[in-house]
View 1 (cartoon, helix red, strand yellow):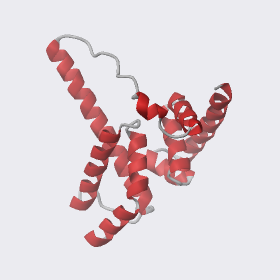
View 2 (tube, one colour):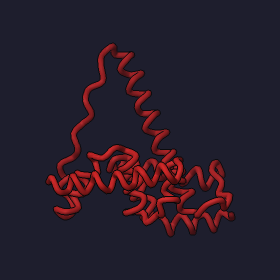
View 3 (tube, one colour):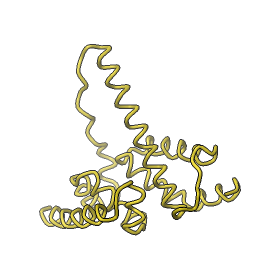
View 4 (cartoon, one colour):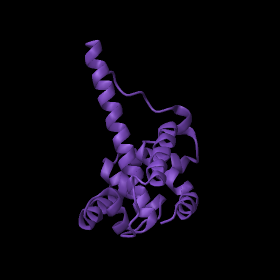
Length: 168
């Protein structure tokens, strides 16, 4: 695929890609911007090559997911090394930003809160299917799991989300 075509595809999918990056980064906007920039660089520099084996969107989302995972692991290892250097222990993760939790409609905030209670795999598949309009098959490819496993996590996630929404 030519560079001009890649740039066009990336531009067309930018909003959806940023939404997916936010999902991969637990809503951390700054981290999502960094992940997206690194993913775009991988695509444009040729480190990641589209071979046409899947839809471009599916391929791109898989790159974003892997990039977010790489950055998360790198940050975790850096914190662990720093902790060892200091000889102390890592403190608890900071609580979510109240402004971010309060943003959006009440229903959207309820859904986001309930989604956070789901296991990571279920949350990831629901995000891909509902927010990114991917099929379960494409979501399975992005997540790097089999379609059967994706269907199971998807259906369990929907059922659990329904329960959680009813409890609130």
